[in-house]
Length: 138
Image: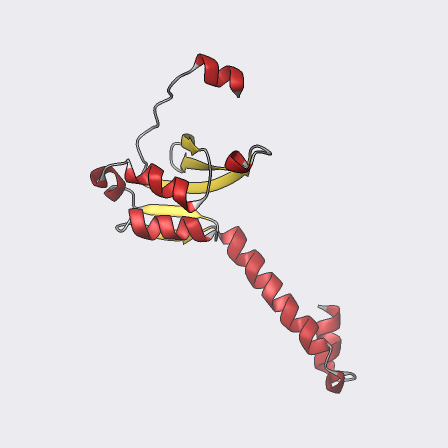
């Protein structure tokens, strides 16, 4: 990263796409760049830009620099359920529909159902009933 930064002073970002995907990757041990935010063009399959930090302050500063006209052309924002991405979608892309990645929805649903199943099975009143055996096996 240091070699790249010393040789390349400026990398322009690509224009915002119609379908903008937001996600993060673990990048560094430094707190300021532990997780970077990747902006990705869904249709072109290209990285639009990388934001040095996924925290709301950095995202707000970044998207404030992009004109309203360009931001209003984004029709969909796809992300995980990270609160900052939801805030960005609603604040900076008012004309866009925010779509939560289905992987995260299914994972949350599965976890919640499993918690309910375990809590229910701990009730001693259900032992011996067909419902108890069903939950234990499935």
